[in-house]
Amino acid sequence: MKFWKFSEKKHDIGEKGEVLAKRFLQKQGYKIITTNYGNKLGEIDIIALEKDTIVFIEVKTRSNNYFGLAKEAIDKHKKQKIAKVALYYLRRHCKEDVKARFDVIAIDNDKIELIRNAYSL
Image (cartoon, rainbow, N blue to C red; front, side, top):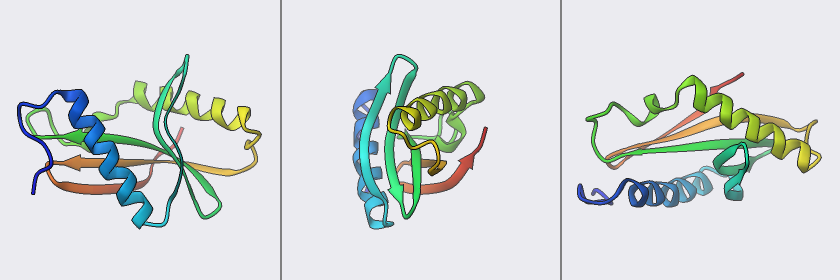
């Protein structure tokens, strides 16, 4: 069952994807710390805790494959931007010695895929 209509705006599709992603992550045992964390450097969709690791999660949602798969939408520039925001978050919250990683939730139509440790910098 699809959760959006083709006519919905990109922003609305993204918001619905983030809601689905949060539910999915919680079922996987992640504890959501915050969502839409942002500063002057950029934004991270979800910051969560999985066991002893802080996880910075980018959510990509596609209602069709016209522009490719959701997981293919994170380019080098986006990864670098997320990493800068993540470093700022870790420093600001005195968590520089805590394990951290970057995950991606890719939602294509009604299929959710969790990519753990999707990239490193």
